[in-house]
Length: 374
Ligand code: ADP
Ligand code: MG
Image (cartoon, rainbow, N blue to C red):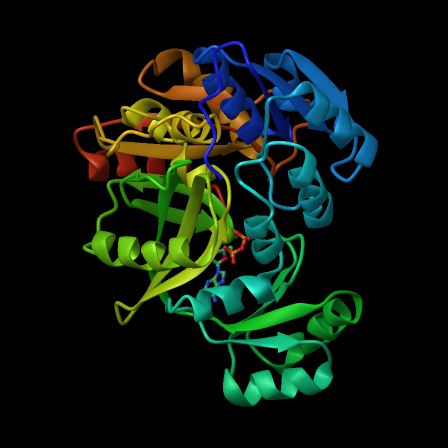
């Protein structure tokens, strides 16, 4: 569906008020839009930068209707919202992102099936429902393998890395409670991601390829441009995905490069992504700017230029002491603090982006700063 661009002063409703919702709202407001956010948490980060807040669960039908009535367009920052509710809402309200991407991608199994059908290269996997399936995993994939819950996982939550028989009890416990998939555990040489925005007129804008380092399965840092020659190959995989799934707005595809230099699609986030945060300072458009342009029906830039190479560091609860101690001496650290009230060791509390002429040197400086951080 093509629709006319939203005029200034119109209202964007955002389902989900975490840091992604907050940064979307900030881009929206810069462009003259009002924002209403719906979130179950009373002190969610987006609440304090939005014009209006609806305090409700993501599947609260009445509250979602209220959001629809008060908004000219609805977007979401979070893929684990109810696909059924979203489908229902698309019949009454304007939701350019649609519900198909959510429906396919919030379940790791249908996500993988969709990626296979689209013709992308993915890590071999097996659906796991019971202990018989684990026997198949052992023979077909072999140790080590990784078991992931089909629904609700993020930042490595709901995943077990299985190196040998002695860890299988944990797996049996997990699969008794939740449906899972198992995939081969790769020897990874690099992780990269590609953020893309799709306009309402099927215009495609690619961000530069991002190189990601995870620690404990949580993004630790992103370097852009990625130090690999896989950018075109990654774009090629993304193009296949775009043909298979309806998208409008910003989304990110995560990839693995293994020790034999093979590129695998890992997963898709149908929304702005942590590894795209550097674009706020390092590019001429941020991933939130292009997302808002897309969902409000405006043209997207033909290309996004990187103005300067960048290193983006995530700031977890356990990093904030370091930050508070040193922040004042480092104006070159572009610090974003999301405003979450509860600080937890592994919770994402903010991030910082450093623009640099020498990413290798800046990377080393950051390793020294974060020394001892797991
Ligand atoms: P999440 O939804 O939690 O981001 P991912 O599937 O992206 O889930 O896994 C998180 C991280 O765990 C990845 O970025 C990677 O570092 C590691 N990981 C996941 N699957 C594999 C795998 N099959 N082989 C090696 N490492 C993996
Ligand atoms: Mg991931």
